[in-house]
Image (cartoon, rainbow, N blue to C red):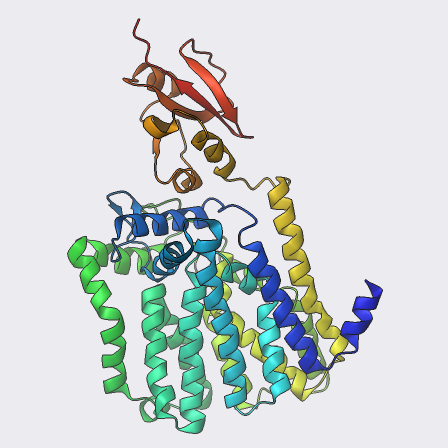
Length: 476
């Protein structure tokens, strides 16, 4: 271990950054198939992708068979369903496309820094910080919506700067392509986040007419609508009511009402106002202490006036999700994701202005080590995080599984739906009533708290929380 540390310490900052990127991505890639889809988010979205591929309905993601999911646009589902089409239905397949999107963002951060006139070492460091940032690399390998949203916003913000600084028409059009990707990833939230970032940027410099001078608004908006609008129209046509729920419910009620009861698909979150800032501090680990130390050194030296326009722009980009969600209670830690690329670029920019010893950046190797430890712990079942993969695997091995129904009494986890290929159904009553109401043999999964013994049932297996039994109708 000491020899490895010495070898890494002897690398140049460029070499260290490349090693950090490579190790982080290799570890995350290797981990994709090593642990099951977890309830609630990953298993739910994985099941939607499985249903999309099975039914070949590529317009509307389905919460369950014949139950449309109006909570998010379909880009995350398209990604995972595409993975299933290529690699079959498994954890690796549904996660891999999201990791590829994350890798694309890392590449974009590098290219943006280079095209913004930064050195190759600064660009590589920004990409390395991003690749080893805990929230980014973990979510990039997960079945979630936030990585695709971050891709759209990264394209949009980077394109705006390049359109401004280099008078690039291509960058001007890419600005609207990024917005379209965001609209297909998470909806109008993209416009709000970009609007806050650019609004701050315009206000602090009095650049009131700048956006109208640097962007091709007429043709750009047409391009954005040509990419994103057809899906919105098709979704409303296929399942009427979608636009009202998605635009009003998801983008207004969810934001302003903690524990919003109108949520059709689960329990809304209720965090204390301002919690997003704590989420950001934790999400940016292990780089948060380095960032605060960089700021401390600059303030102590009297140089933190933020006179550099590039740094001002990055701050506006980074702060947008934090400002938006400061007064929202219905939040998750993943909501900070769109600002993380700017955070990584800021650390690299501060390093170029006032360098720290390169050994400080060995910090980035903590993340892949933690991923290995976390995946091992989940696989061994010592974290308390469980899915239904083991119980459903046991169910599939039963000789009666192919021609018998499968019922869950009480709560039916999304992972049960995913790992049973959609065959797990929720029982309408309690355990006794479910067994008494059987017309044909069936498997029933119930809580281990249930201690009832039935003459017409036999135990076939169990997990920490549930028991699998096989019951036949009581014809007596």
